[in-house]
Image (tube, rainbow, N blue to C red; front, side, top):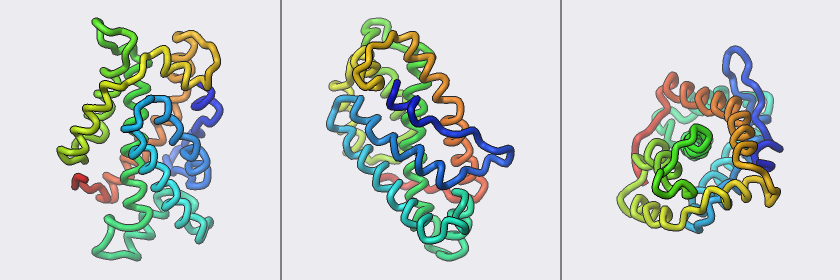
Length: 209
């Protein structure tokens, strides 16, 4: 659990504004999460998340005061790009990033809720499939979906996944899931706030890749 618990997300303010600096610091530690899933098929998702973080950071670094919150970035780009928005800049990068973050959220929540394949309780295919179907599948064309189905065959055992999350430390599944639930509190609130912002600003796009 060290991978997640060492870099927890902060509590959101009442207005649910997501502080850009703290957000970027927190998500910077998430790409290695996909290494815990074992299969190299997840490398593109990991790379996509890393790339989108870099794009958002490059915009933020131009004017940290102007772009203090994620909403300020998106609203500024809406005004600056006109008809090209939202399929440009940090707005597009954050749109895809939040989907990757949602994948992680649903996977961890499914594990924390005890959802499992009764015939293969030490596999996490059920959890990964749920996360993919709800967070990413609709945005992927048939080829990417086919690649992902192949990845399920290489899904790690739950015990190996927990050990990877804990950076090799010996922890019980019960303790690990307790930590996951703690991590998910502020993490889920942050992801939800970003999704709500995209709905409010009509910034969501449904095209597939």
